[in-house]
Length: 250
Figure (cartoon, rainbow, N blue to C red):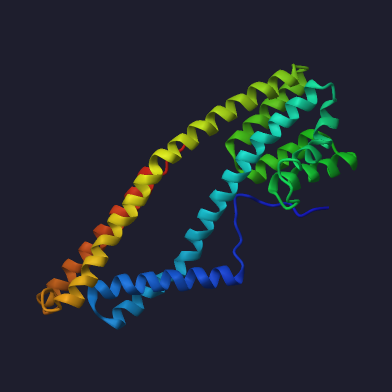
């Protein structure tokens, strides 16, 4: 049986972890050195690069769930067509992976692997409901969970499954369209926010190269280091706030 993937967790390879730590350490080293002009302090701050893999895992996991959400939308459309053609519910799910191969030729595509796994479980005598429930729990996606809940209720009560799946696919499709529109609207703002966060460090680097004596008074007393630390903390807080502000969920 194929491996069951937990889409709520993303496992980095050793190479990816090493790359994430190195990249995080480099960014922290350069940023702190531009502020404090001290190799020792910069090396101490570079240790924060150990936190980079956790942040990278969260980003990659969210990107994978977003791809799975879009793929699931296509799966619902194909499933609706199969049911409308007169296939039974179980047979429609059995042939779903074959139908989706026309859209996703790569056999490693997540949605193909999942529905192939569901077909294997059906062929081994398992019922459809637990297989779908297991998929929704591992996916950690609200749209899939809602579909499974509605589908299970309709199947138990003898509802019109074709209409249930059709209306659910339409609702999920409209929701995804809104999400894509919002993503396009804030993409430029995200790019601008990254530039805004980079400007202070670029400015410090320019001053260090063009006028090294301009900020020398800050390094002549402990108060100067306190002010630098406060400024660096405020920049970090602003960056965190911008990320939170642009993380719009529907």
